[in-house]
Image (cartoon, rainbow, N blue to C red; front, side):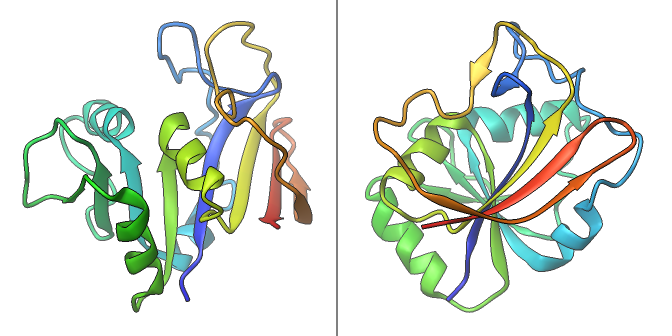
Length: 170
């Protein structure tokens, strides 16, 4: 069975974007393990806001066009660039997860992440913790209402101060 892996950048105070939705605090000076990660996945789950933000930030083009894109939205129109997921989201995710292929990158956002974690569909967390405190912005796990047990699989500190932490979700 394919694994769903949340791979996300976050600040020391657990925020995934600044107060105005900005990501200018994220390091892009080196690979930080992304090449290896991208070789592990062949599909990406996006929330509507995350998908539209990623397309905008990438100049209107999907930088991951070689991966199958699934966009979770009740308001976006169908598009050949992605498979639209609406309605019974959990059943569709279970079907995709049980299908053939490599693992699946849960790109975000926070609402989609919380929904999939609540239903125990996320298998691993890859958290790139940047050495900055934003103070205000969007928390990653703000809408989770209960505890979720994890186990540290690996961690790596980079000279930039970024720490990558890899957890399995129990």
